[in-house]
Length: 85
Image (tube, rainbow, N blue to C red; front, side):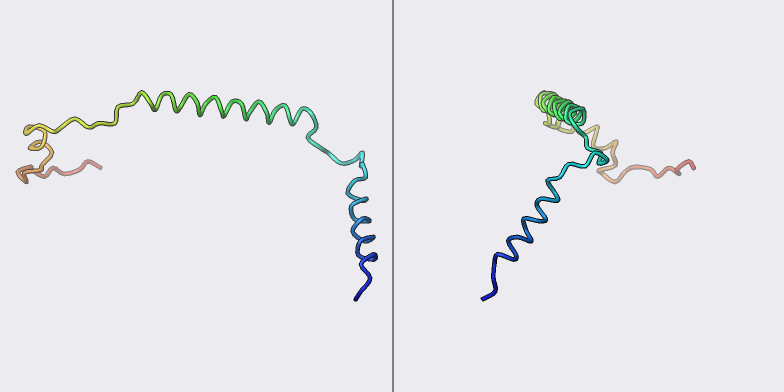
């Protein structure tokens, strides 16, 4: 069997290079976190408000009367009109 210590040392070498701090690297930092957190809270508030407003909406349709159905052409007695365009 091959020696596993060589692959383990290679893995730790890669981890050490990831842990090094580079001053030229741009990171979002604290300001980026604060902006992201404020946006997350804003989206949460908007979703909560939307759910509250959607709860107030009445989705039941009113039954059609006989005069409404004849106006819509349900009985087939409507007249065709040309479209403007």
